[in-house]
Amino acid sequence: MPDMEYTTLGKTGLKISRVGLGTWQFSHDWGVLEYEKAKNVISRALELGINFFDTAMVYGMGISERFLGKALKEAGASRDSVVISTKIPGQFLNRDDVLRSVEKSLKLLGLDYVDILLAHWPPCWHNFPTREYAKAMEQLVKMGKVSYLGLSDFPLELVESFASYLSVAELVVLQVRYNLVERWAEEELIPYAEKHGITVQAWSPIAKGALTGKYTPDNLPKFEDIRAQDPIFHPKNFTQVWELVKKLNEIGSKYGKKPVQVALNWLIMASPRVVPIPGAKTPDQVVDIAGSVGWRLSFEDWRLLDEISRGIRIQYSVYYVEKEVS
Image (cartoon, rainbow, N blue to C red; front, side, top):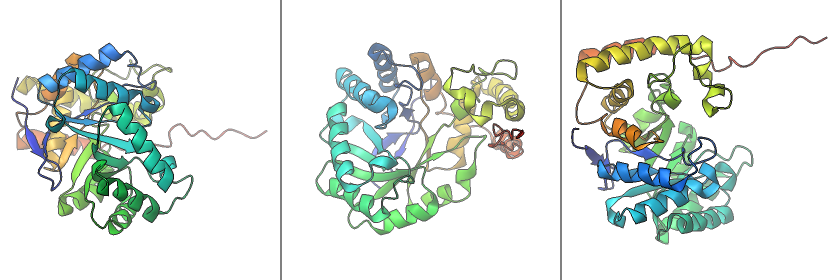
């Protein structure tokens, strides 16, 4: 397997692996609730040179943070050898809850400080002022409990507003949903990150598994699977996605790579700022993730996937059915 590649986190000088590991899977949503399974995944990631880990308060309401912190400690990872980001949800973004929840996160992670704290999404249900949580998060930087700040799933207007309220802290990460099927981040957020030297954490970089080759039009996620209600897996949409998956398979065979590895390699070639953070439920899946770097698609193959991808139009309203009124 090729050696892991590394890049720099924003303008910080911190070295991060070119592909990270997301840990949403350590939750009820995705079903990895046994600590030993989580530990095996994280240990394998460390062995393969992955040092960038992303979690969140809402992933299992603390389960993911606890599993990640415990596994890193038991694996003997030194504090300065890993970079950890966690996220605070929009409904916690008043000043008091920012301070309380980060204190809880640090206890769960078993850390004195977290490298990156991201607001997970805007406080759209409670309308906390942007200045309120920007200054509260910055206070944690001043106190040494957080090193850097980031935003996850924020529109550009709120990114700019948030950044304008920072006095001493640095905005180093924008986390966005970004994959070969869903490329809206290319319109505004990725250009902004490139201009300002910000790292882009690409979540759902394999479209919740749609680009792995595991699923086909005749074998879509079952009802109890969290993926089942994602519009990407609706038959009307997946027929388009399937054409892309077949091409990922075809191109991958030329390089001795799996579709997931081709899909991730395409993203890191799309921008030097993009660092995908796919999840993994097993050590073997971590091996697949690590195998997405250390090589590059040819320009011709990258362009072909780009062309096919741009022809995909996901209907997000596909589950909306107008019922007749009697």
